[in-house]
Image (cartoon, rainbow, N blue to C red; front, side, top):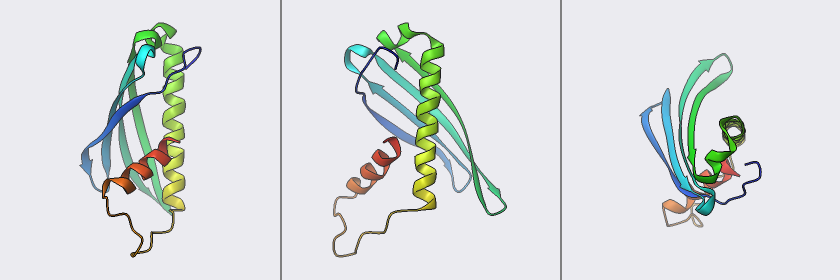
Length: 122
C-alpha cells in the first residue's frame, strides 16, 4: 500500500451464512512492522435472469505504519483488493477447475480449501 510493503499472515472466517442468499467474510492479519489490518465483507447474492448478481459491502481498518498513510490510500487499496477477490471468485464459479480424479484426491480435507481460497486472493 503506497510506500509501505509488507506480507500479511492472517485468517478469514465465514459467518452468518444463509444459503444461497448471503454470508459475511471476516478477516484479520499482521504485517510485521507495517502494522495490522482487519475487515469484513457483507456478501449478498441476488437471483437475476440468466445468473446471479453478487453485492458486497467492505469495511476495513488498519493500524501501525499503514494507518499513517491516510484513509484515502488505505480505502482505495482495500477496494482494489475486494474487487480483485470477487473478480477471481466470479472466474472460479463461471469456469470451475476440473474436479480431481477420485483416486488422486487429497486426503487432507484442509488442502483443497486452502488452495481454493488462495487462488481467490491471488
